[in-house]
Every structure is written in C-alpha cells, then in structure tokens.
Length: 221
Image (cartoon, rainbow, N blue to C red; front, side, top):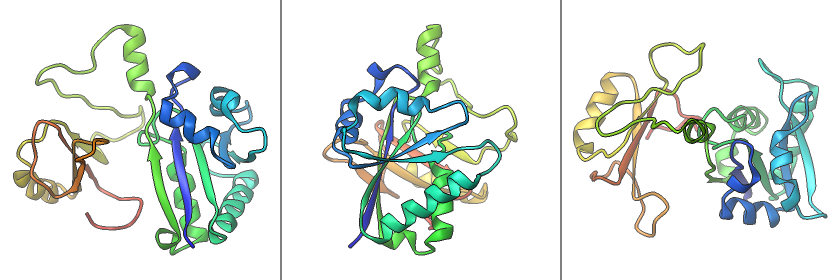
C-alpha cells in the first residue's frame, strides 16, 4: 500500500491567509511534519489553532546550510511511516513551490528510500507566497502587461534554475528553445479547474510553462 505526503502551504504569517483547502487538510491530518528552527516554528504558530488534538507532530529541525541530528531522526521516522503506508502532512511556510524547506526533506527521503516515487503519492496544496504578500503590503505590482519578472535569492546566479512562462500560447515553439538552454519543461493549462491539463500540450491564455534544469523526482518531462 502506498503512503501519502500532503504538502500544505500555510502562507507568510497571518493565519487568515491560510486557504480553505489548506485549513481543512490540516484539520483532518493525523500525522503532521512541521519544520522548526532554534527560534521556534512560525509554521506551527500559523496552523496550531486548526490541529486535531489527537494529531501526532513530527518536528523537522531545519538548520540553514544543512541538516542536524534532529532532522535526520525526523527523516528516518517519516521514511518508516511511508514504508508502512501511512499518510503524512508536511506544513510549509508560504507556497511549497517557492524556496520551501520541503524539497530538502524530499531529497533526504529519497536517500532513505531510493524508490520513493513508487512508495508514496505526493500531493501539494498551494499557499500564499511571501512574494505576493510583500507586494500587497507595499501596494506595488510585481508585473503588468508585457513586463517580465525575476524572482531569486541574493546569492543566486544570473542563470535561473527555474523558468516560468505565463500565458504561453505557443507551447509548440517553446520546447526546443528550452532544450537548447539545457532545460526541460512541462505545461499546465487551467490549473485547479475541472478541465486541467498537464504535459506537452497546446497552449492558450490560461497556460503556464514551468521549466527547470533539475527535477526533484529525477524524471524527464
């Protein structure tokens, strides 16, 4: 029996910004994996009022620049539960797709369980990113019309590891361009809607292409 990992983005800090789906997922979760640093856990502070009183918490100790014994123990516990077919919910600050601690945990789990993709079903519940929250607080647009945007960290190189193309109406012409740039891409049309499509599909105004130099699941798109 396959285990399951649900990754829930809890937003940037205000519990009111936790999505309805995120809140319901957390409320119904029996085992929660919550990241914390030596200063505590903002993720826990955001969602603690929604936790089931009988839920089990696995604390995932996050240290900038690597893991420690606390994180190793958490990874081992999570791996054992996945092997037993259990469902885990990982609580991530902001949105799990953007600089989330979860992907470091995922990579560590793949070391413990080399065939992780066959043992677990991964589901991601998006959250409000600090990027858009900061823009809202500052009352400034991040991009408008045909403007472009680069989201990066201070230490990142100028060559992005991920490229996101919004409103991609010409997907058929994009794949070769990405390949020549050393990237692999996937398109998502009408995300979260009933007629959502994912893959190398025809594009329209509601299509987004995500391209990366390295995919965490190790598979080609």
